[in-house]
Length: 463
Image (cartoon, rainbow, N blue to C red; front, side, top):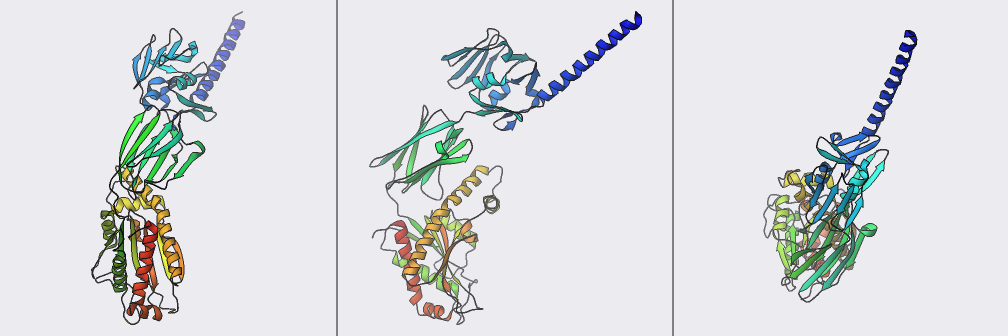
C-alpha cells in the first residue's frame, strides 16, 4: 500500500511539473510578443499576460498620445485630453466616450496590477481611438490618421483664403518657405487620398501641393507669387489660412561674376582673364535689365576676391529670387572645343545635411528642424533652377551658340544659396575665336543679352 501511494504521489508530481512547464512556456511565448506604439516598442514591464490574454498598461500608452489619466481606481477610470473624455467603469462593466457613445465591457477586458489598470488590446484601441494591428510579430497601436478631404482656395482682390478640410482633428504647424514666397503646413497623424494633391493657379498663388512626408505626416506646400502675411485659424476639423498680400516687390536677381582679385580663373592664350570677362558680362546684363521691374544685384562690382561661401551668403542676405554665377570654361588640349554649359545644384540629402550643419555651424541634433527645413528648401529649388537653365539654353540656341547641355552638379557656390541657382559656363576661353570675340566685346554684349533675355522670360517681366 505504501508503494502504491508513493507511486500515485510521484505521478501527481509529474503531472504538476508538466503543467507548470507548459504554463511557463505558454506565458513566456505570450509575453514575448512585443507591443509597439507608433512603431516603437513598449517597455515589456507595461505588458502582462493572464489566461492567454495580453493586458497593456493604459496610463503608459495614453501618455504617449498626450492623454491624461485623471482618476484611476476599480470603480472609475477617467481619461482626459482637451475636450475629449472617456469614463471607464471596470466594476460595472461600462464605458462612456464623450457622453455620446456607451458600451459594455467584458470582465476579461480589464485588470489591475500594482494599482494601475491594464486593458486588452481591443479595448485599449477603442477608448484611445487608435488603429490596432495584431500579427505574429507583435501588437501595434498607431494613431488613427486624419484624412485630408479637400483643399479649397478662394482668391479675392487683396486676400486669399485656403481651407484644408480634415476628417478628424490633427495637430499642425506652419512655417514660411525660405527659397521662395509661400508657406509649408505640416499636418501630423494625417493622410492624403491617393497620396498626392496638386493644383496650379494663375494669380497670387503659384501652386498648392499636398503630399506624404512620411506615412503619418502630410506636408502642404503653398507657393505664392508675391510676399504675404498669413493668419492661421484652427476650427473643428479645418485649417484656414488667410493670406494678406503686401505691395508687389520686384524680383531680386543676383549675378555673381566668378573669381576676382588674386584669383584670375582660366586664362586665354592672349592673357585674357576669366575674372575680367565674367565681370564685364555681369555688369552689361545688369545694364540691359535696368528698364525692367527687377532688382539686379552684383556679388562683386570690381576686381575683388570673394570666397565661395561668402558669395552664397550675400545672395541669401539680398533675399534673391534667382542666383546666376558667371564663369568661362577651358580645354587647352583641344582649342577647337566650344559651347556653353549650364549647371544646377543637385545633391544627396544626407550628405547635404551634414555639409549644411558644418558650414553654418549647426548642431545636427539641436538644430535638426532648421537643417531639415534648409535641405527641404534646397531640394524644392532644384526644379526652378533646372527650369531657368533650360530657358538659358533656349536663348543660347536662338543666338546661335552651341549648348553642351543643362546638367546637375554639386558646385560649392550653388550649395549654400537658398534660392534657385545656376552656374553658367559662357564659352571656352581656350578657343581662339571665343577669346577674340570677348576681347572686342562682341561676346560680352551677346552673352549679357542671353542672360537678360532669360531673366525677362523666366520672370515674365514688363518694362
